Amino acid sequence: MDEGSNAGGLPKKFAALGKLTKIESALRAAIESSRVPAVETRKLLKSSSSNQVKNTAVYQFMCNLFEEIGLGKLEITKKENFYMVFQAKDNPVSNLYNDISGKKTCYIISDALADFFVEDLNIPSETTESNCVNEGDEHCVFRVEMQPLAVYRIALDTTDEKIIKHIKDETDVDDILSQLGLIKPEFDYRLDTLKNYHIIRDDLTLTKIGQTYYKYGKSVIDDEDEDFEPPWKTMSMISGKIADSSSFAEALSRGFQEETSEEEIKDGEVVNLAKEADKSKSFAQLVSKTLQNKDKNKE
Image (tube, rainbow, N blue to C red; front, side, top):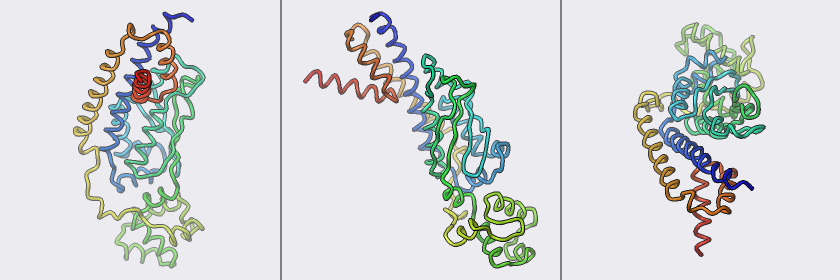
């Protein structure tokens, strides 16, 4: 085995893992501070196309946040009722693994999207990387699958529920407008949303899904309970937390590298550490494993 190649590869692994731990730390700090009011999430869910999504404050905030964390430029390419597809161009995470081919490597972005949808949008979701540049694709692509029941309960508000009830009761359209105090354009927009989510038919009757929603569904939160600021109003505070977290992670990474110099590592340890780095999902996990192994050796 070429000892020089192993030793030479170690600093590179440390540098890459150090960058990853900075991203992971920044991600945790960002997600903890970025809860989005349901009224804003509804605008995202009620968008019927990716172009409409791009006009929402939630989407613009998410893109800015991910770029500040260090995950590069994110762009939505498809929006359906229960899933969204995102594309990452010039993905800095994939660049950290550019010596790996034939594998998907951008789990951090998948985790970030899942955390944002689950923790900040309150939508149970699963995210998978369907395409990756390190697997030979043009761009890294991520698909976010959202739980349908959660989507219904956030996308539809109490006014939508009242419209559903009136339609079930076969109330005349003019009476619905009068009783709910709606103008025709808003009413038509809400009808389009209910049709898009297969709650009502074109003839203003309830579908089976609509009947089930009427019986069991209910909006997650009342509009009047949404009394906190959206995170883009406090972006400077979130940016500060991201910066502090990244600085701490960088100091941890540098300190660990200084304490574990190449001269102090024996040939066998280099090989073992390289193997552990390949199996570890984060720099923090690698540090933990290495320290545990040192403690065992002392015993």
